[in-house]
Image (cartoon, rainbow, N blue to C red; front, side, top):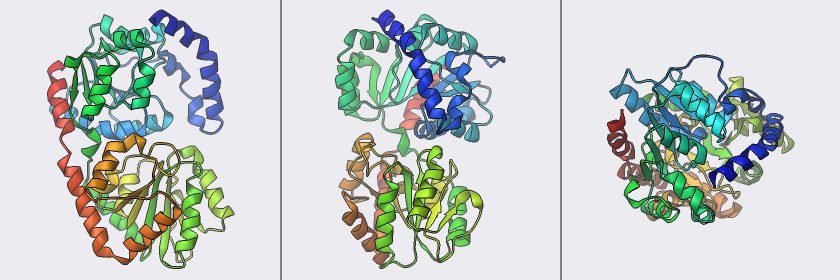
Length: 418
């Protein structure tokens, strides 16, 4: 079965490269470092590394506290982080400048063999749901303990994997431990072929948000120096067709909340110019983060065209709406906003964070809005009732604190392999 999988992967490589080239027309970093995707390296790298893999920005952010803990406990350890996307790569390079980083190679037998030979990892730690038959088999052949941490599996993915049971069960046989976010995730991994004794529900690492005093201080300074007396409404991690929703709501709300300021943080950097143009087309006055300019009374949109500052921006906001939830993307991490003490709103599409969303709503610690009118009404209530805003933030922080500890539990298990 794996031989057929490999044959098909080789067959589709030209199409994969074409897609990379096409994506690079919108995001130029996609045209760089293709050799790494085939594990073709031109320089020596550390070996016997502790190897982590995080697909993109969200997974990397959740991984960083664990990496820092390992660095603190084992300062001489050699670490490697791989990612798949350029945005994930950029984030790793910005935060973990002292750690080796490359793209994870394509799951081709020769590429993964070169990767393993080049770095000789002594342990592999994969974030969330990354199941690669050739990579996992190569780790098994080379006796590299493999862990999938913060693992999650939707019902749709479970159904898909169950259609190829021979390939998936043999792949997961090479994994020493799957540390899932929830019991439901654990049951789904068993359903697709994992041995029950290799699956444990250890909690969600994203609850272990690093809330530093320095970031809070920077956020409060930004609010004073740049936003002034404006009522700051941040829309985080937006996708195409979402920004226009909030621009239209903003235009209506300005009649009721004259000091309202819309802070937009697009999820993908290749869309910065697109969102700026959209704002101007809707006759909105825009200040970009990269310009260094401050907002004035006439400013409508503060466009964050930089990466890696979302936590700090939450600390500067009065209300947050987490994007990817008004379009069928599946939502994004609402825990960072909750941890940084800003009232949290999100839309109806929260499949990627279903349990977290339900938990917040059960604790009356967030507001879910299903349409434009509900968003508008929620903003008006939050603006007019600062006591209610405070109640939301207190409940949300309590929810985050109650669910922390996954990183410590995972660390206690994987450190036995160091």
